[in-house]
Amino acid sequence: MKSTAMFWVVNTTITLVLVTIMAAMNFSFNWVFYVTVLGQSMVVYMVYRVLTDDYKTDKTFKDFYEDHPIGQSS
Image (cartoon, rainbow, N blue to C red; front, side, top):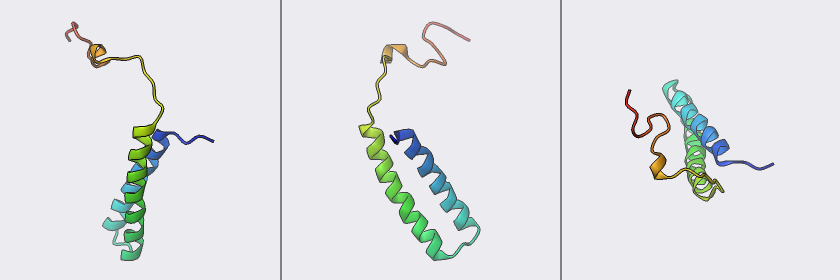
């Protein structure tokens, strides 16, 4: 099973939101601390996976943004 970079982005985001919720709900310091350390290590690994992901596209900077193409006005 290949884990993609987006898998790590989603899981890291969920983990860090969980830390925020746990801190706001006054969970035990130990739980918040360990989940924070886990989240920080996930961020490092996520950045590595995103930067080394074998993602290919045929888009260039001339394509600009797809939601607002050059030459068309709203």
